Amino acid sequence: MDSNKTPDVVVVSGAGGFIGGHLVADLLRSGKRVRAVDKKPLHEWYQQHENAESLVLDLSSFDACQIAVRHACEVYNLAADMGGMGFIERHKAECMLSVLINTHMLAAAAEAGVGRFFFSSSACVYAAGKQQQSDVAPLREEDAYPAMPEDGYGWEKLFSERMCRHFREDFGLETRLARYHNVYGPSGTWEGGREKAPAAICRKVAEAKLSGRGEIEIWGDGEQTRSFMFIDDCVYGSRRIMESDFNEPLNLGSDELVSINQLVDIVEEIAGSKFRRRYILDAPKGVRGRNSDNTLIKEVLDWAPSISLREGMEHTYRWIWDQMIHGTAKSGHNFT
Ligand code: NAD
Ligand code: GDD
Image 1: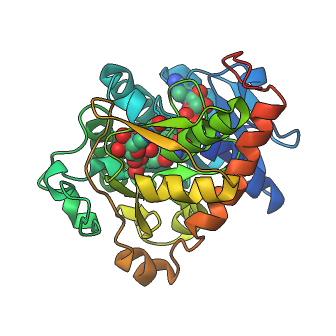
Image 2: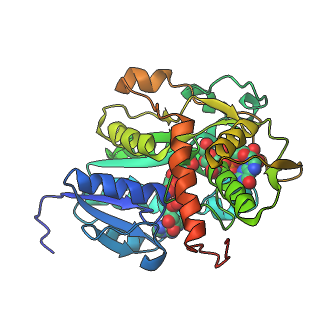
């Protein structure tokens, strides 16, 4: 490869996953030269894009990261071992091992002189004490400190946020940080244990409808609250943050707060069926309430996520229903 070549490749790590797959599609649509990287074998990628260069690499090693960032002008670092509450509450060490990806990707990007580095952080960095009630005050960026994030996954994200900052200050690598709040949409994880509430509820409602069972299971008492961001807002916001001059962490999330029971109401309305709810009180629940304060992102970008939960869930339910009907479950489970 010609080492004098001007870097023009946009790298997306975690491109075989949910957000990465959509981001690659969007970058290609705007004419970028894209390198998509993930450790999963290609046939397991949620989306494959023939116009992207697709590499299967385990980015927990520095050598792999050096290959990934070659001739890169920008890196979107989305690779992580993660999932919804059912995964992160039971796999804390695995979540924390994503620090190897973040450390090595930052080091390789700094060494290669990459122009900009985007890190997908999480609302799980926020201090537990500020998320104890269903009618929670929306979380402002400064609420991450004094630190008491989600055990395991949240600590890793907070540490990696700070690493980004110090790579910028000490090595001149321009870093951009988004704290994603629960993202959902088509082509995401909807079964297998890593799925988050929106996809899980769609699957459970569709399953109850297909099987004629009258009941669905809900984790917790259903009165815990969250805000959920549709994937199109996530992709658009990530690119805007990357292009902006703002280098501190920014919330990227919806501020439409709903209880899990309200989320189930929406899905049942879309599905046109209602079911008895069985509440599993000792299931993984996470914080009692979480919402995004979007004051800062509106100031910085003059924009904030705005796609309604009803609209986004309509697309998501239809997509999950199709997966179940056409028997594309990764688990091999036949839902029909
Ligand atoms: P995802 O699990 O669908 O995608 C992550 C991808 O990273 C997977 O395809 C996985 O194979 C890949 N990966 C894991 N370890 C790797 C390694 N060592 N080398 C190369 N690839 C590896 O998750 P997602 O929902 O698309 O999330 C993308 C990013 O956004 C993650 O960093 C996640 O922590 C963050 N985030 C997501 C949400 C959300 O609600 N989806 C919320 C907050 C933060
Ligand atoms: N996953 C899941 N599955 N959650 C359910 C279910 C179910 O069947 N039923 C009810 N819930 C409840 C959970 O108990 C939790 O209280 C709430 O729905 C939200 O769960 P998740 O969507 O799994 O995760 P989260 O919002 O607590 O955290 C997610 O978002 C963060 C960013 O905001 C996780 O994906 C984190 O990894 C992510 O960083």
